[in-house]
Each structure stands twice: as structure tokens, then as C-alpha cells.
Image (cartoon, rainbow, N blue to C red; front, side):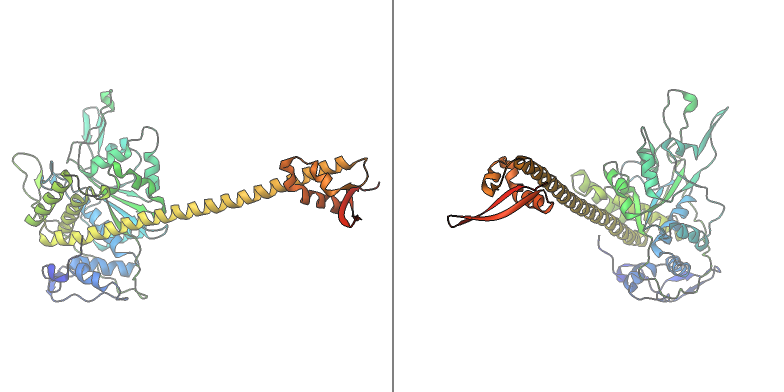
Amino acid sequence: MSLASPAQLPGPFEVVHGRPDGARHAGPLPGPPGNQADEFEFDIFWRARPVLAHLHAFARARRVAPWALLGVTLARVVAVVPPAVVLPSLVGSYGSLNLFVGLVGRSGAGKGSAESAAADAVPLPGSVAVATVGSGEGIAHAYVRRTKDGVEQHTAAVLFSVPEIDTLTALSERRGATLLPELRRAWVGERLGFAYSDPTKRLPVPAHAYRMALVAGIQPERAARLLADSDGGTPQRFLWLPADDPHAPDTPPEEPGPWRWQAPRWPQRSWATSCQVLPVCARARAEVDADRLARLRGDGLSLDGHAMFARLKVAAALAVLDGRADVDDTDWTLAAHVAERSRATRQGVVDAIAAADAAGNRRRAHAEAERAVLVAERLDTASVQRVARRLVRRLEGRGWVPRNDLRKTCASPDRAYFDAAIDAAVVAGQLEVREVSYHGQSGTQYRTSAP
């Protein structure tokens, strides 16, 4: 997917943008502070909306990656959207806004810092319940509990935080683990819980009756197990965003005040269902339909299987962040930039894993070669010593024996070690050597050393 030019964004430079104090004024936003290497990206994305420019400036001031701060902020905003608010049924049934964000970077890249900074950059009304992921069965417990009167929902929305993605994948590899399948169901808003034979153990969570957002830290070289679940569709459900900022300025800019976010007025409930459907622009509907048609006909890459649905979720989250309850053309265009950043970041992880595997293979090959050389050397030494001992025994009690006659006493496999063995025995003082001449022919003879 190609990036849109600034001209394709409706008025990215002459927008009316909000200030932290809630006032608004018109005019161009200031340019990016510090290094100008990311000016193009800044112009076409971060300048597109006041809240995006605010996040960019706040990230630079707090020394966290702008994309990571955006990802966490979108997850937090989604977490406060009522569970009944859904995307229209463009493919199959209604679409959930539930969002999974992966912050990609090496250990210490700043996932935790991005999470704490997001809470300060865009404070949300009320509190967002935060939990860790333990098991597939445990997810339902985060929303409902069983009482003497039946199943009771105690929490509507949870923001799950996973510091390291390999912790999640390790949990998923336990025998009988149901974690990844349950997360995949949650991403699309399906019913949660398991149909145990014992009804007292059942904790059903109805479809679109809960809100889930998940933020996970992903170290590139440790994401192989997550990517390996592409057949199940788990990595396709993540928004992959970098937790580093290569163009961070030497001196951080002044920190802007917190953004005053107001929840939009949500759509009315449909008469046919309890869902509240977000309006989506015609262009997004057409592109989602065209993508689905292509996939029905067998086109598309496996790692892009949910790309359009993920982009639509991002577009909805951007709209809500902007204080609106509808997805317009600008949301859809901005979501394309986020989707492209996600795709490139994910590909970087794939490349890093491939490079690490190749380096590992080279290290193993070198180690095997060195081991083979050492084994060969040790075998040669042992063989030389064995042949030398045999030659000394054969010369015991005999006089001088010509070299060729002594060599003929060796078995064929041992003759390769004869020269080294006879020299070793002489150096060790076990044999004596002399040069002789007979009828004009010179030769070498050996005998055991005199006692």
C-alpha cells in the first residue's frame, strides 16, 4: 500500500486544532522539533490532525517513540468505547473495535514508558481496568464471575498488558492451552468462555458484550513463535509499531499539556440488534469489499489475511481519538499510513528472525567444522601412537631392519601413519635409526634402542 501525498489528505496543514486548554485556533502546525529526517512522514501523518501533532510532540518530550505512543493511545481510547459500539457488517457479521498492539523493539526500548506516557498525554475519563494475560480460561474471569444467582458481568472493558510477547507464546504452548484461540475470538468480538460439562464451571461472555485492548512488547528475535501462528491468524491481528525513534532530537522539545479528550456521541442502538453501528465512509466500504472479493478468489498473502479489517479498526480508533463516532475518508487515509508502518515493522521482525537464524546456522556450521578438525586431529594422534607402539613391538629382539621391510609389516590402513609413527618412535628414544649404503644404494634401517 502506497503512502498518500499531503494533497490527498483533506486540509492537513490548514486545520483547526485544539490546545490543551480546550481552546481552538486556526493555522499551520509547527514543524517537527529536532532532526528533520522524518519531515515527510511528519507532514503527511503527524500534521494531519491536532491530536496527532500533540502525540508526536509529547512523545519527543517524554523520550518515547511517537508510533509506540500512538499505538498505546489508540488501545486506551478503544478500551473506553462501549462494547456495543461496533463496525458495520461489511464481511460476515458486525466487526469489533477490539484492538491488539505490538510495540517492537529490543529489551529496554520503552514499552512501559510509552504506556505511562500515553496516560499523561491523553487522560481518559474514569479508569481503565488493566490486567495481564494468564490463560485462555482466565480471560473470561476478567469480565464475569459466577455467583449463586448465575453468571454476573463485573467489568465491561479491560486493557491487557503483556511486557514480553514470548511470555504470551510460552503460555500458549502449554499442553491443552487455549490462550491464542481465545485471543483470536476476542479480537473479532466473538463469544468467550468454554462449554464445560460441569455447568457450574461455565463463564460465558456474550459476543460484543465486552471490550478488549491488548498492548504487548515484542523483541524481534523472540517473535518467531508468534509469527509461526500465522496459520491460526494471531500475528495478523496485531498492529506492529516501532518502539524506537531513530530521528529523536538531541534536545527534547517542551512538553505540551495533556490533551482534553471528549467521548463522542455514540450511534443509536439498531432496532434489530443491541449493537450501535459506527457509520463508515463509502470509500472504506468499497475497498474492504474489493479486498474480500480478491481473497474469496484465492489472492493475497497469509500474513495480510486481516489487513483490511485491522485497518478499519485503526480508522475507527483514529476517529474516536478525534472525538467522532464515524469513520470518514480522512480516517481511512490516515489508517493506511498506520497500516503501512505496521506492515513494514512486521517485515523488519521477519527479516531480523531470518538474519538471526542464518547467523545461528553459520555459527553452528563453523562449530561443526572446528569440531570435525579437532576430532580428526585427535584420531590422527591416536592412530600415530598406536602404529608406533606396534612398530616398536615388531622390532623387539631383532637387529637392524630396513625401512621398506618394516613398512610392509603394517596393515594397509596403518601405512598412512607409518612415517609419522616411525619418526615419533625415534624422537621418543624407542627406536634407533642409521643410514646405510649397499652396492651403491643408500637406505635407512631401524632397531629398538639398546637398554
